[in-house]
Structures are given as structure tokens and as C-alpha cells.
Length: 337
Ligand code: PHE
View 1 (cartoon, helix red, strand yellow):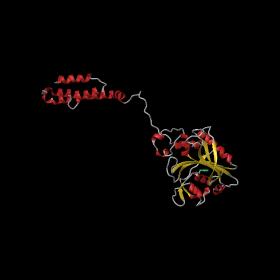
View 2: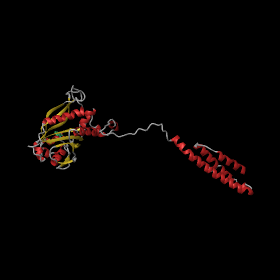
View 3: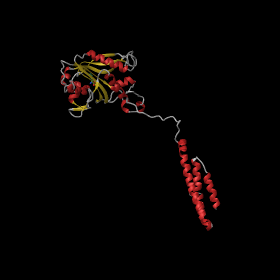
């Protein structure tokens, strides 16, 4: 029996392997629950007394040597095993799914960028607005029918959700001295039925320039610059007389159709033009309401819906896409700003 232990001992000494499966097989055979060491220990009582001491010693040696061998081989084989199963350095990197900017943000940033190049700053104001800043200061007297142009969400008699960001411009005029050159991007709210062309929440950018000697020619030139930067060098603009309580004279601005270049198509309803914004010279009453001397200063203002600009720029035919956050829609937009 001692011979058998000795044979196993030399087997342990000789065993070498880098393969985890082989090492495991070896461990089970030698020191597993039903392995050689256990089997031999069970035979201990059959060993003649005078041999018991030596047999016990050899058997313990077999147990420690096997345990040691398994530990050594496992330690050495580990990095090899990892390289094989987990680490393939030739594998192509996995695609990182990056988010993209919302088209409304892309267009807003582009509008800000265009106007900041000609000296406009950005101003901000509250979405819940009082009657003075949203209406009265802008020359909409109480009960005046012009208030109906803007279907308002009232919160109380004196407060509503702002219907345009002209309210921000009143705040700027009240707190800053001319020259003022600012644009105010932001969310606005109107009680309109939701359709492909209208929503009760949308985004505007309004602009204001007040200084000595600002004229309608400055307004036209600034808007032409904007249209060409936004829609391309070949874009033309057309101004049509219009009415806003806070500007006099007032105009609506069309650009030559981005699709047919003015020839006439479905999108421009064969007119060759697309309306993009409202504008005018700031009414002297508005300047006075905000503490600006209308005999010294004049100014122009304009306002546009960001959704409208984005629809024309990207060829989107339903405004509701902007609010549904369908990932298939959103991931078509990539931007550097
Ligand atoms: N505030 C107007 C609107 O919301 C737009 C506008 C701004 C028109 C400035 C003229 C001048 O419709």
C-alpha cells in the first residue's frame, strides 16, 4: 500500500498542465471528495500496525503536495485562461450610442449664433408673466380686441402663461439703458388646438434693437442677413404690411421658398414665398411705458417661431413630431452647436 502512495507521489511530481480542465480533473482524482487521498485514508485501519506511521506520513505528504500542485498550476494558468475567454484584442470596439440635440435646440442655437455675430446678447425671463409685461406695456390696453390674437392661458386675472417672449423685451427695456441689442429665446403658450401646424406650447426667438437713429432700413438689412445665414446665400426676403399693437409700422416677413426657390410648389402653395416672422418699429408708446425717451431713441423688434424655422430648414411636415420624442425622429439630427 505504501508503494501505491509512492507511485501517486511521483505522479503528482510529474504532473504539469496549463489547461484549467485538466488541472480540475487532476484535483478531483487526487484530493476530491472521492479522490485517491480519501480512498487511502479509508484503508488506514487495514494497514499493519508497524507500517501505520510511515503510511500516515506519506499519505499526508501526498495530500499537501497535491493541494500545492493544484494551487500552483491554477495560479499559473489563470492569465492564459483569461486571454482566451474574455480578452480578444482584435475585436472591433462596441458602438457607443450617443444622444443627439433636439432639432429645436439645434435651430435655437443657430439663431443665437447668427445674431450674436452682429452684436445681440441673449436675455431670459419668466414663463408665468403678469399682465403688464405680456400685454399692457406692449400697448395692448385691457379689453382691446388685439388681445384675442393671442389665445391666452390665464392663471388669475393678472397672471398668465406668457404668449410671446416680447415680455422679456419689456423687462430688458425697463432695466437697461439703450443701446440695447438683445434676443430672447424661450417657450411660449397659447390656447390652440394641437394640429400639424399649431401647438399649445412652442418656442420663439424675439429680437430687439434700440438706439439713436435706428430705422426701418436697419430692420430690413438685419433680417436679410439672418435669412441668408439661416437658409442660404440665395435666399430672398419680402415684407408685407401687418399689424401688431407694439410696433408701428409692422410687417410680416416671407423668404423665397426653400424648396422651389420661388418657382411655386406644394409647400409654398404656389406663391413662391414662406412666412417666417413678424416685425416692426417699436411703438413710441412701448418705449415710454418702459422709461425710454421716444424722442431720442427708436428701435426695431421681430419675433419668430423656432418650430416654423426648423420645419422649413429640415423639411418636417408635422409640428407634433417635435413634442413626441420618438427616437427614430430625434436621432436623425446631429449638430455641432
Ligand atoms: N410677439 C409677436 C408674436 O408673438 C411677434 C413679433 C415680435 C412681432 C416683435 C413684431 C415684433 O406673434
